[in-house]
Length: 373
Image (tube, rainbow, N blue to C red; front, top):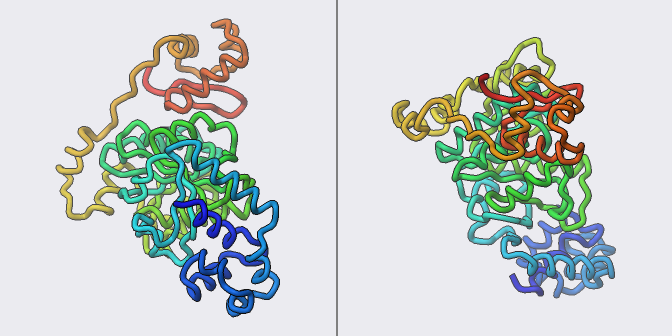
């Protein structure tokens, strides 16, 4: 994209008072952002109010600065890109939704937008079993040829991204902020890995802060990109339930891991099952729904085995942490006493082990090694 075209898009989308609905009307009437910016004020007033119509021709200093920063950001890394409605490779799945984004900011593998994908979403405060299930399902889906879409939130979604990154099909993380404002900050290492081997995506301009409204709107992208939506654990009133509803409204199948009927974080999944969501115990249950023509034998062949292989044991310092941990829940203080690591060093090692699925963080600042003793 040329700088002049980028500038026209940003003027259209970021001029106060225009809004997405106004931008859509202007594009429908005039054909392109350049035509909108070049039109007379009275012409633009056919689709938007007088104030925004005039402001579109006189960008503010703040908007001019955003154009400069965005252009510099795009030149700073070959993985960075923008995608606009009308581009040949704009995701067909999003075009079929009621409110497709007009412009998307990307970092990573743009080709993943055309991949067959499934959304995995859920609680930010899952049970250890729920986190492990999300990681396992994402890993197996990747082996079977599906890209995992999620929102980079802590808990279920971070576990799903980490599991998906172990396969060749990658993962797409949809953010509710500008791509220079990763939120929450704690999965920054995971975000960096997704930028390298998956795709970070947002409709929000650089510098846009994470707000509740942004997160609610980004849920429609998660639901719209994927062929289906899988809820691992969720509260009845949560963003995950909104995403599941949006997926259903878009005609995508909704799946849920049943979980315990007594666990608060399973109540959302139980509610979805009562409303007609399909129960999921293993990845074949998803694949048979999304690929009904495939036999169970061919699904097993694509997976190589019903259960994903355990990841290789970490070596070096991370291996020493696992050895010091054993298989019972242990506190940070106890680990420090056993191994002599500093707090900063141990936190960094534990974060890496969490992202790889080797360790689970428990309530009360306890940690537990995953797998069999």
